[in-house]
Length: 343
Image 1: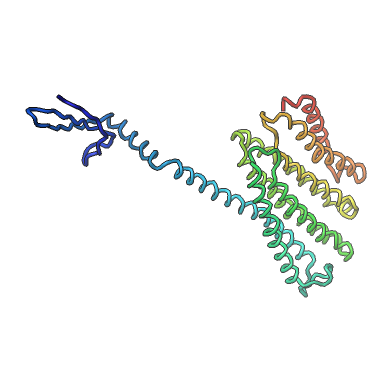
Image 2 (image 1 turned 90 degrees about the horizontal axis):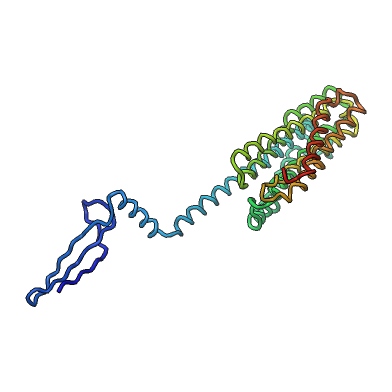
């Protein structure tokens, strides 16, 4: 009588790795029981190595791989948030520094700010920045990440926070540091030089920080690589349009009038265009609101303001190509509104 059992066997040293099995045979001969063991490899050498690797992954369990991916995702999120905060903070401190340079005197006081010391201004500015960051910005970002999924949202909270905490204060610093000198009766070339520094130095930093924040948001959105790259290139069209509008205030006639406030107001409103996310094929019902928002926040105000500047101050305050571009963009958007499913 002979009985056979098959059990897993350990891998012997010096032999090829791979799952094996042992054949144990029991045979009764003349009243005595004889045992024999035969070890065989279940698969070939290559298949055995793959099987051992799969067995090791299975023994490790899904918790280790899941915890590793969660740790990498959390670290990446923290790095992105720090970079976004730096992107928000740098334009603010640069425009504040430019404000101090424009308002400062050799005695180290700010006569236009009730004679406040420069050091006092920086202490107030630093405390306000830290307080807003700790008690408003970071808690808001934490709540956004806890409650909202950026891949499924139709808007970008990070861009909205950038406009509120960086874009608005920076534009206010530029106007405060240049328009306030009207009361000081400075020479025209001095005022022109200060505004040129604001336009060529501060404004590009503010706008670049805006599109950099939007790019970080697009990096977390569920977009194809070619679509994301095309959208990033398209952002520069809006950037050039905005910088050209701000440069219209370089002329002393526009700068000395109240139209300079309209220029900065329209430029600030157009920054909210980046808050809205372009709808994908799965959200075609959001195409019409997105197109209307683009018309209302950017194309229509820019076209109206540029036509008004040309009518009041002549072509030198507004080149004809820019309002023509805005008008054609309005026509194209209206065509898209006619059939938003083709968006």
